[in-house]
Length: 97
Image (tube, rainbow, N blue to C red; front, side, top):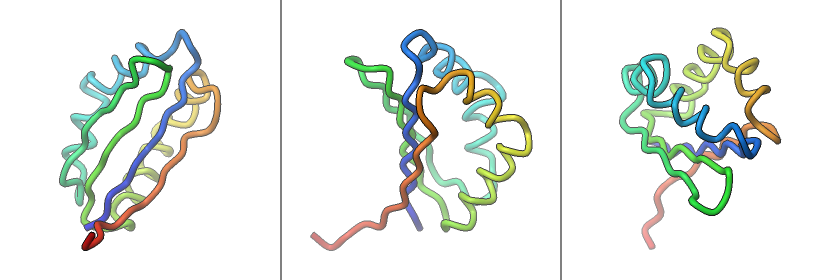
């Protein structure tokens, strides 16, 4: 299992547009149904225009296949209109600490 953290730094007036899309039928409903997805939770900062997704996937390869599928279906163009900087994705493992 791998944890993916996706950080969306939205333009000030576009944060709600992103949250609305994530809540819609083309958003996280499809993400949660994608092969290898175990969990997706949305984090929204009340003090900024940042939205983060906390995601658990079977593997990095599963997540990367999902991202590739999203990009092939117009995600890049949509995000280009909403974000002030490129989407950031980091991969993490749990530690024994």
